[in-house]
Each structure stands twice: as structure tokens, then as C-alpha cells.
Image (cartoon, rainbow, N blue to C red):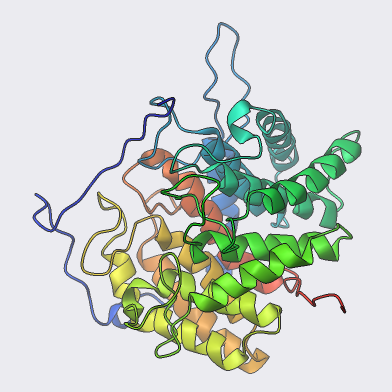
Length: 396
């Protein structure tokens, strides 16, 4: 095996115990004013700039150009390229979506360094189209690198002289995602137990954001294979239980419905994605957001805890800020008169678990504050972001 995979396996008899869930967290959550949100966004920008680093070793002073995501998964004992590319792309995109570049001129320079890093690492062997072994996170890097590049183009923020290579890589990544869809079943997953060429269980966690990114690529004029999109949408639709709206962790809904508390991290983005493709409804989106707030305490008990998919609901800590970022985006698809109330609830919960530094972190690793803070920043900025691109199948 060329890969060394280190997982923390947690059984019900684990030596530690998660905190007891609070059934009514909003009762003691602070109310957050607009001025506090603005100050928090500015603080988040400063935190992210300070967290930019380099994992490169050498005699020369390193160029601080990346924000690697850190989890328990390693390749050869090192953070894999997919996590380095994906994490860096998420932070860079979050910085791009703030209006503070004029007030904080370092933002443009930091994003430019990140762009150079992502462009270079996309050429690494373990970022080429493909899938190795039974677990491979390069697709996560492909999706979020594409999202970063598309944001640069949409905001007319591509550094001078880099326009051609960014355009080239956008087209390349769209093609790569098409080439790496799951055989027969469609969609995407970083876990494929039978390898790359066999049918595997699609992951809503990965499939939904990948589809949103492909929708935006299509809006920007890229050629996106409609059959790839349709297969992924079919997979996402088949992952949702008709009984309670819960999306399975991977694969397709069976006779027994998954429990909603374990699915709230992926329900909002699943419903939003299907809605944007004409396969959902505002009512379903609202239901997923209501479920997020109703069962939020089960996300909270897994924040900053060891292990991944721990009983009773199999929630991994890395779902925490992912869930908040996409719940915030889904809120903006509701009727305008409903949004303020939901935003206020989300802000209150985010303020309740804010770090002393002013950032946010869902893992036991200090470095992961870059991911948590960036996803929170994107959540806070959601009302100002453009409406996500939809998908209309071409006429046959």
C-alpha cells in the first residue's frame, strides 16, 4: 500500500464521553446585532490572514501560501494534497467574498499566493484525475478548487497575467469531476470500498456541493456534461427518505429511514441543490432548516470531540461548520420575509460557540480554526452572496 490511512475508530465503549446535549441551546444563546456581525467578519479576516502557512520544508524562508484542512486522515503520515488544496480554496474564497480588501490590503496578496499554491498542487501526482485505494480525498480538493476559481472569475479578481491559466484549470476541473463520478450510480464519494472502477455508494456530503459548483461553472459558460449532472441528481434524490426527509450518509434510502438528528448536516444543502435543479421545493428547504435548529444540540455534542462517526447518530465533527455554512445558504432561498428570523437564530448559535480568539473551530486540532472560521465567514456573508446558479437540463 502506498497510502497509510490513520483513522480514529471509536466504539460505544470509548474511554471518553461526549458532553450531554442541551435540548434548548437557543434559550441561553446571545442575541447578535448587525454591528457585531460586521466586527466579527473583520476579525475573521485578520485571523485567516494570520493562519496562512506553508507545509513545505527547505532552507529558504517558506512562502506562506496555504490553509491546509487538518483531520485524522493522513497519507504517508502527511496531510494529503486534497485537504491542502480544498482547505486553501475554501479560505481563499471566503476572503474573496468579504468587502474588506480595500481596508485590509493584505487580503489580495494572500489570495494571490493561495492561487499560486493551488495551481501548483493541482499538478501533483495525487491530485490527478483518478481514485486510489478505497479512500481518497482528491475529489474534495477538485470541487473546492473549482469553486475558488469560479469565484475569482465572477468577482473579476483573477490576478493580472493569470487569466489564461485559471480559465484552463476551470475547464480541466469540470472535466475531471465528470471523469471521477461514481461508476453506474453517479455522484461522488471519497470512500469507495471496492475501488475506483466499481459502483459505490454516493455521498450527499460530497455530491451536493460538487453539483452546486458545476451549476456555477455552467452559468459561467463552461460545458458541463448534463448526463453526469442528471446521474448525480438522481443519486441525491434517491438518498433522501420520503418518510422524514433525512438524507443517508452514503448510498440510497432504504426501507428504514435514517434518524433526522444524524442527517441535519447534509439535509439543507441536499434540499437546496435539488430545488435549484427543479427537483425540490421551498417547503422542503424550510423543513430541512427547521430540522437543523430542532436537533442542533446533536451537532454541538460532537464539536471538538475525538472520533468520527460516533453513536448514537454517527455525526462526525467535520460536519459542524459544513452544516452551518450550507444552512445559511439555504436560508437565503426562503421567502424574504422569513430570512431575518432564521439568520438571527443561526448567528446566536454561532456566537455561543465562538473561540476566545474570535474565530471558530470544530476539531481538536488548532490548525482547523482556518476551516471553521472560513466556513462561518461564508455563512455570515450569505445574505450578500449572489443567488446560487440553478440547473436546467438541455432539451432532448
